[in-house]
Image (cartoon, rainbow, N blue to C red; front, side):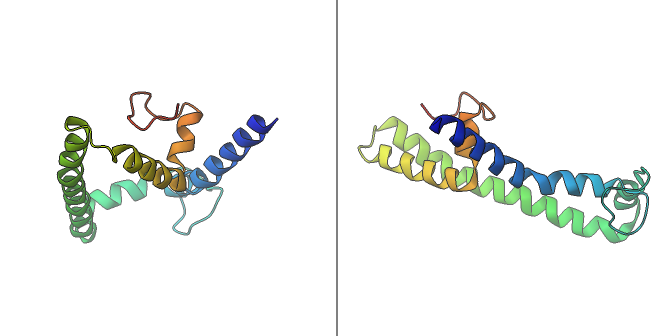
Length: 127
C-alpha cells in the first residue's frame, strides 16, 4: 500500500511538472495571435516567423550561445570532479553522491528513475 501511494505521488508530481510543457506546446501551434488554450485552429505560423523575421534572430542567437556556454562550463566543472572521485575512490564520494541524489530528488528526476523514466545507465540510478 505504501509503495502504491508513493508511486501515485510520484506520478502526480511528474504530471504537475510536465503540464506546463504540454500547455506551451499546445498554445504554440495556435492559429490566433492571442494565447488561447485549448488552441483554436492549427498553424505553424509562429515557428516560421521566428526564423524569417530579423527581430527574432538576435535573441535566438543569444539564447543558443548562453545555452551552449552554460553546458560547456557545467561539463568543464563536473567531468574532472567525477573522474577524480571515480579514479581515486575518495572516501567521501558516497556522501557527495547522496547530496547529488537529494538535489535530483528535489527536482523530481531521482524519483522519475524509480518509474523507469531515466536512463538505466545513470551512475545515480536508484537501487
